[in-house]
Length: 92
Image 1 (cartoon, helix red, strand yellow):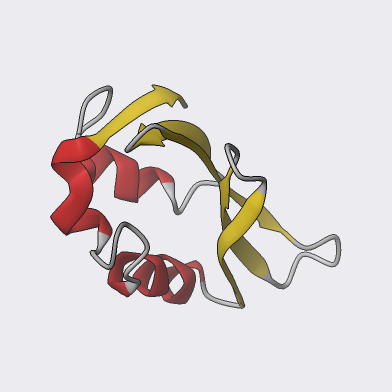
Image 2 (cartoon, rainbow, N blue to C red):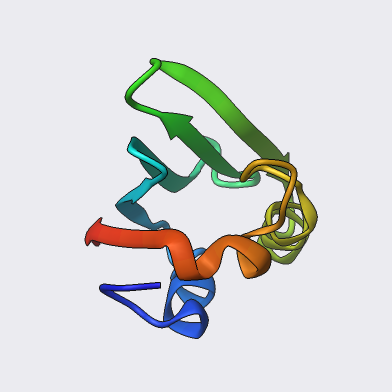
């Protein structure tokens, strides 16, 4: 991963992130936010290039959303850890 370490990237997912990165010529935006009522955290990953939602998790516990993201095969059937060498963080 360039632009951040994988540890910095994952840690940021707990803090209402807004990060943009490139993976295999596709631009992605990952963001986290709390519901207006304040009880639910949502983590979303959008492929900006194709304007498609790739991942979404909502839960009372941020840890559950981050863990689901970490375990999801979102990058050519690989996890973020398996694809990290091919990710270039542009913003955030």
